[in-house]
Every structure is written in structure tokens, then in C-alpha cells.
Image (tube, rainbow, N blue to C red; front, side):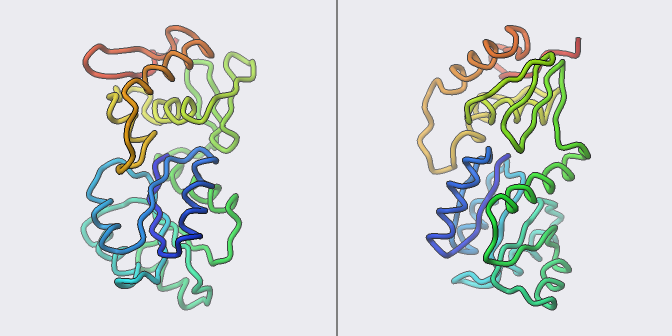
Length: 220
């Protein structure tokens, strides 16, 4: 779950960046409207956490611009403006959810999971495919009834594939989920974690399409 954080407070921004990563999100953070617009020009985000009071303007301007051009990216507004009129303005501008500061990081993560789940058309919190039941909230699952634990990057790759069970995801698409757009990418990371996932589940659970990428095996 790739999330953009738009927050100008450095301590809060870093806390969200690291804290949400530990909860299974792939996070990238910027501190201004200009940087947010540049980041949003890159594909692949599944949600955004948006502060309203930014150094170069209001986050509502960014939000209205997105909705005006038909961008349906789920947006969680996270701001110190906790009065009811401010909440109404944010929601009417196109926010999908609104949370006042101070906040609990676990609640932010749960709300983001719910927003992304609804955007994907899923009602149940768990994801299911070929005997695997994946729980994004706990970064764990069961396969054919037995508990399975995953490393953070293994889970990130598996979740990306589970979100698109019939699609082929290229190596670069999976790398986007593992790394921020300004991070250096390690050349063989995807292959290493695909190998680990096959060892944890089954050799044929994830298929390799040479020259194209990876996808989940067809339903048994």
C-alpha cells in the first residue's frame, strides 16, 4: 500500500513516514504543495495523508485541484483544525476521511487500510487467493490453514500481487512499492523476496513471466 504523506512539520512527517512503514505501508513524504504536485505526477500511490496548513498554501487547494480533474485517490486529511466547520469544508472539498491532531498512529493506519480497501472494492479486511488468507492489519496470514509470518518487504510484494491477482506486475512496479521515488533501488531485491515467498507458500504460488514480471498462479 503506497501512501504519500504531505506534512510540513519535520518531526511529525518523519514519525508518519517511519511508523506507517512499520505497519506495512510503502511511504513517501513531502513538505509543500509544490512537492506534493510533483510526487503525484508519478503513478502508483494508493492513498494520501494531507495536512491543510502548508508553507506555500492550503492543502484544500491541492485537494480541490485533484477532484476537479477527476483524480479519485483516497485522501485522509490530518490537521490541527478540529472544529466542525473545518471538517465539513475538508470533506466537501473531496477528502475521504478527516482526523484531527494529535492522533494515534494505529488509528491513522487503520483508516488508511479502510480507505484503500473501499477504493479497491473490497469489503472484508482479509485478502484471499488459492488457500492464502492475508491480514494487512497484522502483516501475517494463513496458508492452507497453517499460520505464516512474513518479513516487511516480503509482505509488501505479496500484498501488491494479492491486490491485483489476475495481473502481471513488472519488477519496476514492485520496486515502486518497496522504495520511495528518491531512494536507491537494490538490483536483485525483488527476486530475493519472491524466492522467499515461494519457500514460505509453494513453489508455484507466484509465477514468473520472463521479460514481463510476476503474477499469482491461477485459482486451483
